[in-house]
Length: 130
Image: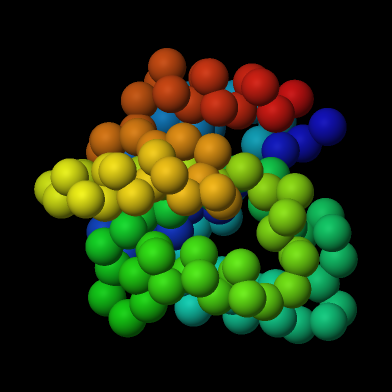
């Protein structure tokens, strides 16, 4: 079974590092990288998308231009149930301790990690989804 992982982050260096880490950790994985949360929402808004396109895991940055990570989570909660089988993990610099606390308490978030993504984090998250 191939896993699909989505990285939502507007920082190109973080995108590259996260994708590289994921691809080094697990071979049977499709990685989707999105610069904005809106891009992800648009991917799933089209009725022709099937369940195979829905990611198994999302690594979500909180601080982005346009729609931030919190707004993305609010929109997904209000919207359809497309992502209900997706595990969402926050991947952030966590400069704000309120964000860390909020991430721990948010019902849609399976976990939260500091940037940059580490191989041990990827191993723990992705190998549990197999």
